[in-house]
Length: 396
Image (cartoon, rainbow, N blue to C red):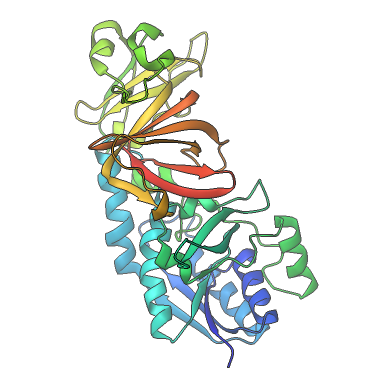
């Protein structure tokens, strides 16, 4: 009897080809479309992207001859993703809803629903890979690997998965290039072969994040302050750490901005902005563009600096609170006082930068070999050993 796989059919080409490849491999495939958002107050040009996507997913299932269901998870999505996202932005942090979608929806609620359908696995159209090794006691260890297409590697979005979740996950297109996926779709006549990739929020489709925030959060006038570029305010920039020494605080101190900075404009709400952002400030006449270096939602103030090389924008390290540290590979967990060398990123498709991980009593410190641009609280930092994603954490 063939094993059953439930595929998250999104209405896009990647999940469509995923279902096709699993059929070819002899699995009993079931397609499910996750309906996670249908708030008609958040639309663009009266479009209803989830309806189009659901119809496309149904057409794919018909074309492949597999059962198709629609699963309404809108209540859970609002509670676990949307409400969390608003809380984070309101506090001046920068959440990643796509990482949360995978941790809280696809590989939690959706996975449980699939198991209730007697599924052995769930499959998604992510460009990443999984393999299995064994430890010294012969126990299986599942590894999350980068996708073979460097322009589409999506392992970062899965940086919060657990060993149990990985054991039930399949990523059939992770070894393929995007061009190969589209070619497969064309060859078998899939209706999604030429469909463009979604550029909006995870599961919300064409709704872009700035528009979504502006429709949900109240505008509030505040000051834009420009701070000078003074590396003396960042003593960690070139400091080397001893074997048993933990780094000091890497975060922005707004006291110097209050004392040394000057007001150069106004904004409509600090919670609409994030560190590293350049567009949307509406302040001109500078020798170099202004970048946001700190967001203070308590005082509703944006701190900015000129140029992408500003000291406040480029930092050598970050911290993760102990309760926010997540190891995909539990066998690699660092004990207090231990350190290890990895490569890390804080954004999707960002280059990996060599770094040291240092575990203190209450925090994990990530110290980069060269400055990392635009580090923001609330983002996920993910660390890799080559092409394997080892762990991640929420930046504090």
